[in-house]
Length: 95
Image (cartoon, rainbow, N blue to C red; front, side, top):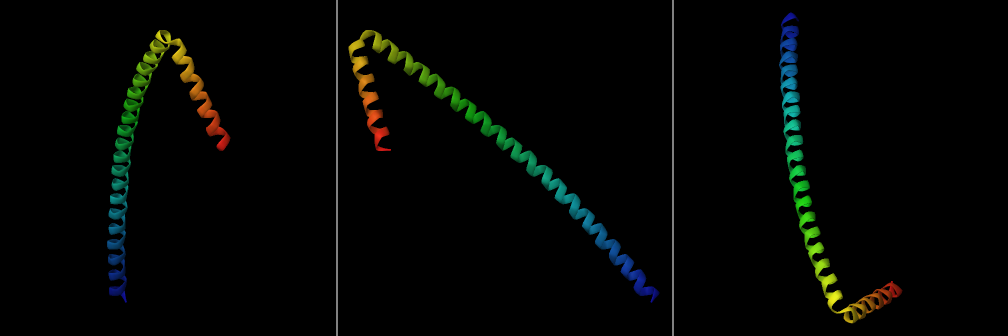
């Protein structure tokens, strides 16, 4: 019976050591995964900010062009504003 107890303790120690190594590996993998996800998130944020800046710059330039056009051609600008408003009104009634 003593041999069986020694074998069981040795087996339990081996299992405990394997479980500890597995837990340590899982924690390391979790840390690596979190770090990778943070890097991807940071890259995504930078990309979105860059795109937003580009769009904002483009819209600002286009608005300047529209203002200049309306100053040069006020009657046409008024007609286009009226047409755009009428179109929006028609589309909103259909919804």
